[in-house]
Amino acid sequence: IAGITQAPTSQILAAGRRMTLRCTQDMRHNAMYWYRQDLGLGLRLIHYSNTAGTTGKGEVPDGYSVSRANTDDFPLTLASAVPSQTSVYFCASSDSKEVNEQFFGPGTRLTVL
Amino acid sequence: GQNIDQPTEMTATEGAIVQINCTYQTSGFNGLFWYQQHAGEAPTFLSYNVLDGLEEKGRFSSFLSRSKGYSYLLLKELQMKDSASYLCAVKDSNYQLIWGAGTKLIIKP
Image (cartoon, rainbow over all chains, first blue to last red; front, side, top):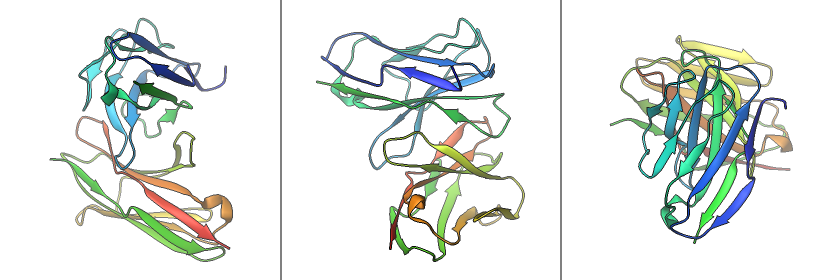
């Protein structure tokens, strides 16, 4: 693995189903983030984690949950998907919340029908 | 509220210079970032400004005026591969990035 990987690349999901988007980084970064990107809007922060074992809510956390059991993995779960959660989801990481650059994964394109 | 404004779309000619502006109003300021995002791909880091002035990196330069809540990204000697969206983002008092909607730059031969 080099950098950040996300899985799946894309997914079509029926409304009401549960879905977990996976994110793994091999850079030993402390901070990780989940964003959604919708046409005409900027990236919006869903949840973040400043270090393993801690998580926090971003701008649009409703309907999503995260966990950070270790440094490398930061899964995002949709407990019961709704069509408004159709979006492109990006996972990102940085060495710390203060350090400048965030590195992004390739994204997951999710469609909820 | 927090707000980042940048033009939705710009068009420029190959070999020319283009300036993409960004204005912001945020709760606190811990730096301004520019990212490049090609269609269907992830954003990649271009530049970071925390002090007023110009930061130059090859064909790309970024300027910041904190008193005016203003930044611009200057792209010189435009190439077709520069066709992409350019995202302005500000790190607020909680060290969270607030993102603009992005400027789609179209380069014509």
